[in-house]
Image 1 (cartoon, rainbow, N blue to C red):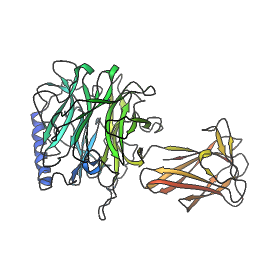
Image 2: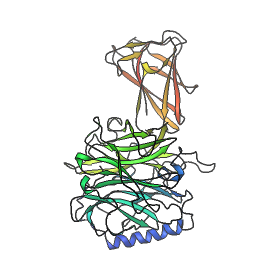
Image 3: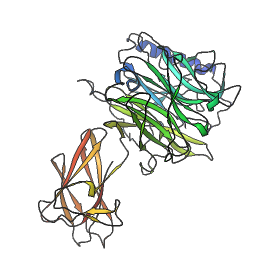
Image 4: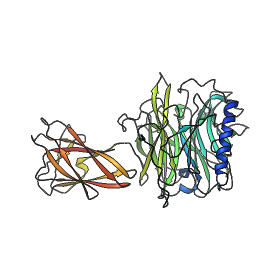
Length: 491
């Protein structure tokens, strides 16, 4: 959940500081000088996954001379790029630099960080990205910011945020503007932008802009019993509502507790809605997705794309995910639990992973994917046989003759080096060797070492994969084809 009541230290008494706003103003001036000469809607200051540049088509390759940003030393999609309290992150790119915004922490009502690349290194900015709260909002409850770069003829950055009403316990959504991505953002007065008190309030604002410039806002109704995701049309400047809200998704029976934290992109002729399910402070918090032929639905759920289990525990409670498209490809920006402090009190850090698309299905780098061996393409020589202790209930093998081969289609969200782990059993008493090919090119052979009895073992190999679908092949080598293969895992 895009909340901060669990972040440490307690933030109920947090108020915007005059000194912090002054520092932010200096930063804004410096950044403003860097971007002031740029057209406001030419794609240099964009979050294209939610704007016209990327709303109707997959990301295009970088132009010649504009390579993808390099990953800093030590980067990993399963390690936080901000190793501290930075929950519900969102990122935009401005003039070649990246700006991240997060839920309030001990340092700021809206913390801001910058980096030369989506994967870092990220540096927290001094001061506060939000100059002050609007008159209707109480301090210490400012969650889940969403920043939209200038659109059309405007030169204003627009911020949507959740905040607690002073006169009730409801969260509502406010809006603010700034002339610089660093802020300070100044809120609009006169009341919240979205505040459905009959639904328990609203949190988790997310912007979506169609190819024709039409603006929408997504959000989550905050009452647990009626928690759902809503869509509402906005005015051309994004500062006012332009129609009634419509519920586009509720919680499914197979989803934990509730749904929240929406993010909407368009890929080809499908709308892809990413959202979180579960309590933000529990390990079963996860990122899921759904697709629809039109923006208002109906949305068909596709299941989880990130979970603690899918990561094998390497990332706990991944969720509140946003898509960043920057002209070099797509990235998934999300948070994970770093520390538990009792009850709902947790510290959540920011993660970034490259994101690929199998049609409208999002695939995040760093999430290991298992491919059951019996579902691979067998050439008629290698057989699939049942085995009760196998992952899918079956295995393949042995490779009975020299022409025995298996082809395994695997998907890579981004081009690069991957680790392929093969789980096998080899009780033959001798090592077995299999030729290994990646998209038809020979790689070092795979050795299935002999093991006592029929127990399981595993072996890893490196594979340079292209973005999208690839084929891994194994073939009998030098008469050695003993052993059974349970599955292949690509990470």
